[in-house]
Length: 273
Image (tube, rainbow, N blue to C red):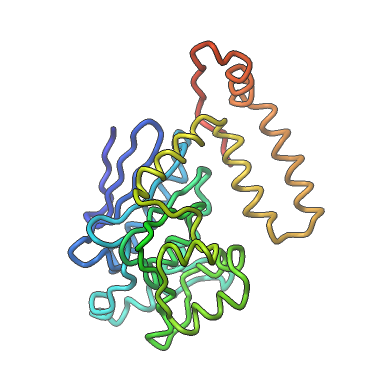
């Protein structure tokens, strides 16, 4: 296992090609200060470049996944809100949005493990994952309405994929807190489990048995095609499949499938996706 602490507020460990990212401000309920925003961005960028990573599991240390924005810490500096919201081009993600949408750019599945409070910015981060596994009693809320704000950290991309429009509006307009079980009924989380960390590891290991190129291509294909025109989706399917057919991991996966009574061959690092 390798350890890499980009900032004391974020811990990164890599073991058996699975990256474990932990929010490490337990005494502050993993609330987001400026250092944490920058550390999450750097962690995402490091994982994007690491072609050996096969899955990512994101957790919060202590009682909560992430209780949202640390208002007092962020507002200590008059520049902080500008640093969070500034962007060169309107359609690009700013720092506040990148800690959510950036996970979508990692060419490996990202599994968010939700326990305790997952409020506001914490939920926006969780929405950036490919899967969300929550404890039954987790506390989940689009909290911004309680501060007279709108959700502006990029989670809207996932909400439109996961929820009906009326349910998304209700959660965002009321700031209502719901449990993990209720979130499952909404479609906001993928699974509810009494031991969400173990469930996440089981899912990650199951995915690791598949070709890393097929997994990366599927993530990119679905993320880009879910709301695009049918013609673009068909074109991407064909292009990605040709790229996979020309790669080594497809051959390795086929061999393993045909020789299940033998020791499986190890996959090589995925291609660039």
